[in-house]
Image 1 (tube, rainbow, N blue to C red):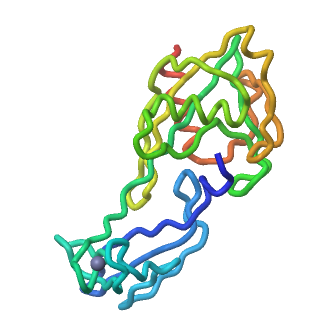
Image 2: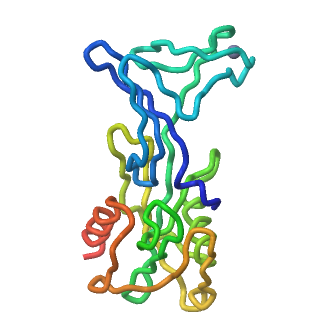
Length: 212
Ligand SMILES: [Zn+2]
């Protein structure tokens, strides 16, 4: 996974407030925290700007499409739909402990988290989940089940969270892949460190429900 996968510009087209269009754009973390926001009443702010039609390269303009402001091509009427971003997350559990990674990049730098990243278009979600763990830990894990699906209104991210196990033989191959994670460690429930993302606490609670 490249570093920018959890930290990139996304744009969400929002809502009418008192007849005035408000549009927000900014940096979002994996969990959807808005890290930088540009907001301007009565005007549209693109950050970064979407200027040109991907089909014919003419200028995009703002148009109301079924009650939602979207970039629409001024020449060919192509509508740009910005889809949700699907994130696969994996809770790796081995011999009574959680395997976590200490993040070496923002957001959440220096804090611990589960493994995960964006699902690629056309990729099977479970395979994306396993790929992300491999990329961050060098481990081949076995997906054991779904913990939950997490989303928030106004947040483009949809997290699909699995639990996974790893064999004793496989765990010997554990090796930190330094692009995003500076350290890997196993923690019991009682030893859990500060987590990078607010949603991690909910994931842990749901994991506990499933495994109690
Ligand atoms: Zn066009």
